Length: 252
View (cartoon, rainbow, N blue to C red):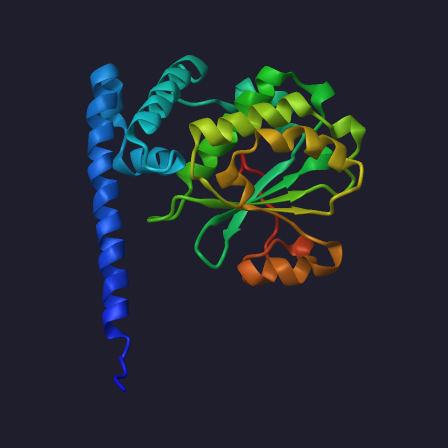
């Protein structure tokens, strides 16, 4: 009887990964040519961004190219000055509902969202969308070198019907999925009240399959254990048993 040391299997896996990488990068080049032909401003887009759009469309060059072109067009119209300033979102920032501090065990920045502080009656849908872009741009600009994704903790403690905002949820979901693809690494949804599930059932059909796989509902009794599985105590916000204080997104 012959016994294998398993070496060839490992080598095969390495070769497969290398071949997959080569396919990805070759398609990045194709997408660049296609998109720059339609929109010369795409020359300022780096290869990692193109790769994220490709991955979001399962490496389909045509779909990824169309998605990137739509993004470039949207960016020019929605963010004509290149960035959203704090002065454009005063009502949203006053709610003090989004924080960013620490990293998980994979080096991904940690964002905390307090759902009960979201007050749609105190703002407008357009300002909220500007706030979402402002926040995602801040998160992406603070990514550690070599990192492309972030982790979010959506805390719904105290959430009620006055916080419910289906239009806002769908708008932010669209921005995240269509304009910042492959940026979300994982999302923990915690302290979930029963009444929230009514809103969740309305939003869920619009979440794409890739994003659905990144969302984890956490039981209250398993909260600390679950978070510590992904985040060291030194990097976990103190309100969840860690060591870090929350830092408002605009202050970081």
